[in-house]
Image (cartoon, one colour):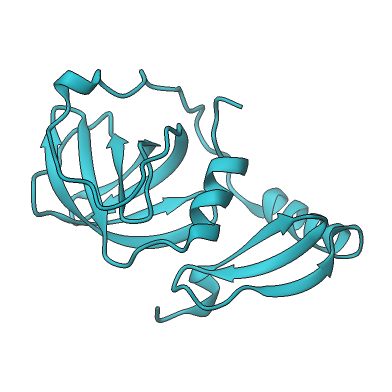
Amino acid sequence: MSNDHDSLFFVIRKGDVWACWLDARPPFKLGAAGVVMPAMQELLSEQASSATSQADETIPAPPQAEAERPIIERSAERHDVSVIGRLRTAKGASTVTIHDLSKDGCQIYDELGLHSEGDRVTIRIGSIGPIGATVMWSRKKRLGVRFEHALHAYVVDHIRASMDIRS
């Protein structure tokens, strides 16, 4: 990736904070959460206070029933999630909900529904991203994307554990 800060995220495992990267570099242990977290919380509160306010986001309906989804051979285990993200294309950007996440791709609910098979997109999931992807299928307001580079297992675990809006 061109900017290491765009691919960096943090995970807390067994009381320790780890720095991780989307490009599958090995994680780096920063130290005990009790020591590292106060500094990180101060940084996040500074960022939050300087961020512009966003419009209220509504939670869309869950993914379509299995019979209504396109049948695609899957190369990786899928995880049932509901995570707010941001989708950017040549046509613009929109707030989306990510479902059915794997290391190789995901299903996305996009209220605008303006995407076509083959479109190149970028996705931001919380502070993770941009993640380059290609639209593999598109049906009404749902689309399936394949990531340009597979997400590291730590990334998928972090998204599942800390970003699912249903928990």
